[in-house]
Length: 372
Image (cartoon, rainbow, N blue to C red; front, side, top):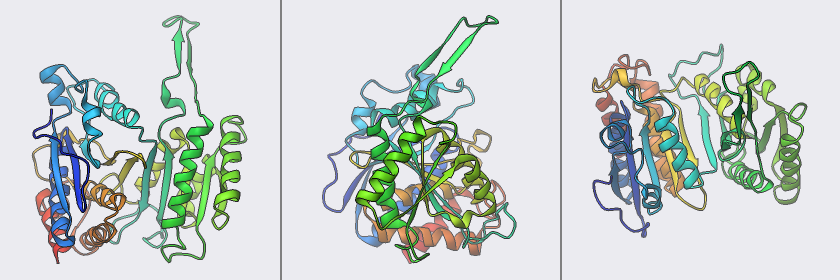
């Protein structure tokens, strides 16, 4: 339940943010993200009204309720949602993830999962001879369709003839709205737009040689929209298996990638490891016409709960994405510069307990740099 009453939607230069700390170390890293958010608000002259929600494993074990019946209706009142982590060791896997994360995503129609893959200075990369100049791209993952819709079932369960079917389903509407977001994102944030190249490129990641129905739809829609509405953006196509190889061998090739839900789920975690791991990876679940939710990609890390050693940078970067989405571009840029300062000049490692700073000290470091 909310600790204080949700306020009306954003007024001029004021943002109403729902904060869900969640489970394990989620509240700890979220607290540092909020600390930096407040520093940015003071520095750049905007206001934030924060409303905390206690959704997560502790609440579920106390009340037996994953989400209140009107939870997502309440969340619609906000400009954005900042999430820490969901996942409790004493709650069976799937209950919280489906009951909170997926329900919010589907109820609020957050049909884009946006995942930057960016290697910051000083962060150890597992790829030989690759540095920040090589790893800087974005994956736009469709977030509402594919095999994640629950279409299918099991018959004759437990017998030798058991049959399991889980269908990947897409409509042209779902594909078109995802592609439109991806093209617009490439136009605004692609390599040419940011001075990192001579052209903006959007690449479709699919499997047209095997998934001949779904990715035929994606490919036709991709080229039709590109030719009609975005002729200045170069269009490429990559099979998903080749994409995985090139993410390791030639990540510098990529600018903006767009793909379906399942392929996006897989390649974004691979991308996260190339940028230094889950301790730095951030993501957004986006509804361009509604309320979006931003979260670190790593889990709740319950074994580190309360120890003050967990890395909060992914949560801070998620909040930075949120500000960029809300239009506070200068504040978002300043926060990213502060994170890069910390990784390049201060932190010994991104690993829990090996940073050379406590969780709160990292938050202080970033907040102080933002306030300069």
